[in-house]
Image 1 (cartoon, rainbow, N blue to C red):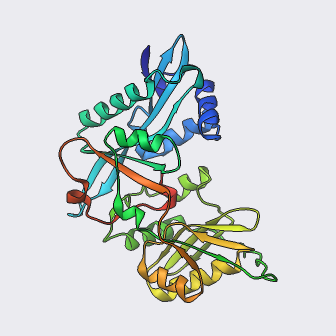
Image 2 (cartoon, rainbow, N blue to C red; image 1 turned 90 degrees about the vertical axis):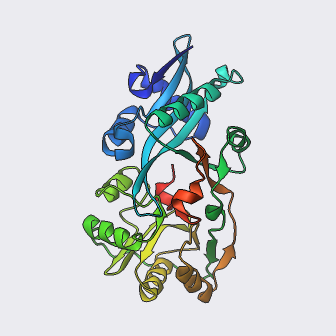
Length: 305
C-alpha cells in the first residue's frame, strides 16, 4: 500500500466515485480544485491522505487546518477530519485506521493540540471514532432544534429581489461572534465561498441593518442555515420574514442564542432539545478542549465539515 496526498492523486475521477459511494455526493474534480484554492482551511494542507492499492484509490481521509478562537481571544489552529471513506472492494483491511493515524501525526507536526470532526450518532463510524479517542463536544449536544408546521392556507411570499452585501454580512458576523469561542474565524469572502459550495442560497436570504438570515430547502421545507442578529427586535423581524418566505415547514437545527429561542417559543415553535448530529474532538496531547475553548463552542451549519 502507498499513502499519497490528494494533490498527488493522478486519477481524481476515483475520488469523485469514492465520495458518491460513501456519501451520495459526487464532486466534480475541477469544482473541488476551485474550492481548494479558495478555502483558506485547505490551501496549505494536504487536503486528504489517500491509500493506493494496486494502482487504485482504496481509502481516503480528508484533512484541513482550521483556526478557532480560544477563551483568551487568541486564534488556535486545530485539525479537521472529513470525507473518511473506503472503497467497498478494500473494506475491512484497516486502511481508514492507517490514514487516520497519518492525519493525526500530520496535525501534531503542525503543532495542533486537537483534531475535530463532524458526524452523526446514527452511523457506524460514530463508534469507530470513539475507539480512536474522539469524544463529543457536549455543548453542541445541548443546542436546541426548532421547527414549525404551518396551517393549511399558508403560502410563501415571493422573495423580493435584492443584492447580497458580503462585506456587511462579514461585519455582522464578526460583531455577533466577538464574544464566542470556536469556529468563528471566517475568511472575509466567506459568503462567496459558501455560495459556490451551495451552503447558502443567494435567492433565499434576508439582510437587515442589524442582522441577516440564510435560508435553504425544497419541497415545502425551509431550513434556516444561519440567523444572526445583534438584538431581539432584529430576531423578531428575521423570523417573521423567514416565515413569510416559507411554504409548509420551517426548521432551524442550531439555535445557539437563548434570545432567539425565546422568540421561537413565543411563536409556537416546537423544540427538540438534542440532535444526532455531533461535533467530536480528540486531544492530540493531554489538554482538555474545555480548558482552551470553554464549555460553549460555536459552530454554525455552513461551517460543519
